[in-house]
Length: 356
Image 1 (cartoon, rainbow, N blue to C red):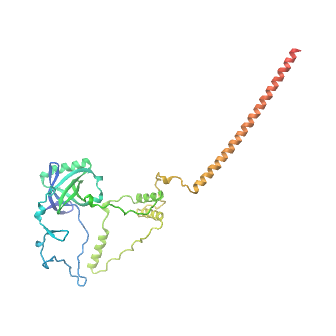
Image 2 (cartoon, rainbow, N blue to C red; image 1 turned 135 degrees about the vertical axis):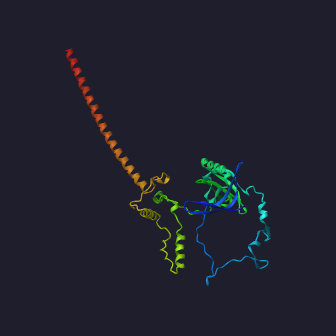
Image 3 (tube, rainbow, N blue to C red; image 1 turned 90 degrees about the horizontal axis):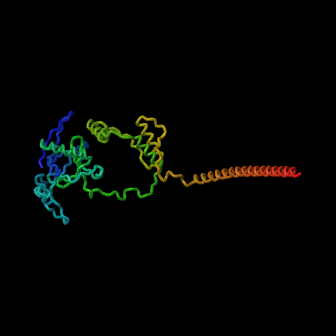
């Protein structure tokens, strides 16, 4: 593969973008010439190994163990060590003639929803740059097709002596390639979860939710490497012959004895850091679960007693009502009987008078 340097102009500065791989995207019968460019860069501070007594650089020399002499880079090649220790030489020509369709091509094999990709598989990231004016049309076609479908492309490609798996997605107006680990390269998390049985209460979950809600979201562009900045201060102080800045007191760490207290304190501190009033911890609505049901402890006995007392009072009231009703019924019956007797006596008297 040929390498080239492209000048990429931005409003802020002119960047040198070096392509690390030149080839093409195979999209069915469509071929898109592209250049592969690193999408990330490391800002980590690196150190040299030195001799602590005099500060001299410590360097590695490449020595042939058979001849016991140092050799140059031009004399160094590749070799595969067999199980019995035999070294099998592999030349660049051997690698160039591998029977791989992906040797010079990023071959798209499928289109899938983005959520089908496990983040554990994510590896290095690259940008795909259109390789000249003829590539502009098919490049734009693939980009717009990916946008409209809301899918990502799964592809196979060869880089640095091995075939790799990748994912193509749209980033602004460019197509990005994310290297993916093969599925069998991702370990299963077996045996890593706690093996002790732990119960988390709804109140603890509510406090955790309240803490998450208080912390809220953040603009990822605001995050920066504080370790690197502190390291730069140390290097600058040492270069100026000054004492390095003192490190702040480390936060105390240890076993959390009271999880609820720790959660409540975390919510308060998070609110204070945002300039909000600590106030009372806002609890989120209770989740509907089996744990929300009344507990079968002392509360159950109290509820039973209350129910029994209420039932007794209702029975007594009903008994009194029934008694009153019975008494009223008896009085009514007696009155009717007396009235009937009077009417009968009156009829008899009238009949006697008529007979006389």
